[in-house]
Length: 345
Image (cartoon, rainbow, N blue to C red; front, side, top):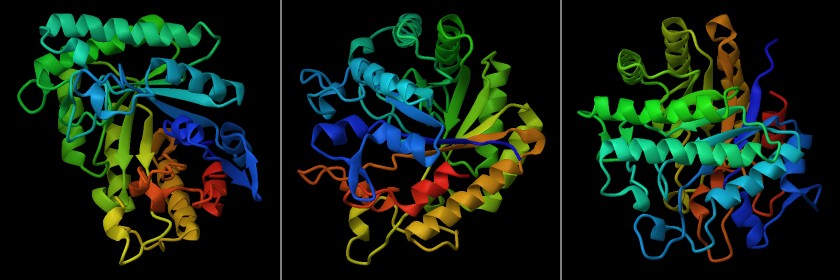
């Protein structure tokens, strides 16, 4: 049986811990990274923002002043993950704030620059972060060049549709930076809507035609938004046969609870086409079924899974509550059976 990557995006952990939040095992507080490792996880994903928390510039001023997810915080979290023996994926958003299919804001320091200058800044920023991480003896296994870039990145320069040559230039700059600074790392190109065969085929055909290289295709798959596991399996099979590269579900999640009076406060408001209940046990069933899909990819190319933010609990001021029903820990930070299931896929 193929050993899967059993990972989690842990980008929010430093902020949780700063505000006094802890994860627990059998009621006792434990180090978050140690808990994940001891539960059986073998990898983590950490997002990188360029300059969060700068009050004088948009989009940097949309984040808190403590600069979580900025370069210094990323390096500290990567150090902890490395010390825990976990493999590391760095996820470059190339923004000062969230980058996703709805928004891909240029970092404030790159705004107003021409495409060649942005390509140079992107290349140097990527090289700098990778070199700083590796200077501490930390290996990086995967590097995402952009986050959920179905509609491009660094808008308006790399916006899709219509700007494929510009997007390809940006991607080539990022890929070249990874090849230079971390040649052993796998370059991951990541789209959302993991069941959409037409999107993936068209996108990666275009990238290939414009000399964009990659090592691994990353997919987001949330049943609440993207479809069913059989449709994901069909897309993974097509990608494996067409491109012959490793495939990773780099974002996924499933609700552990639903409530008619509270669903409006949560992002995951139903389970989509999946039959598993919205309980910790249902989360475990979903993760097991997802792992089976990955193992069924032709050629052993289904590489693994990263659960998105299993400990994104609300902060004392009530913020971040939108993910409360999708975590793999309960409201007190106690590890749930679903976290154990992720670690034993």
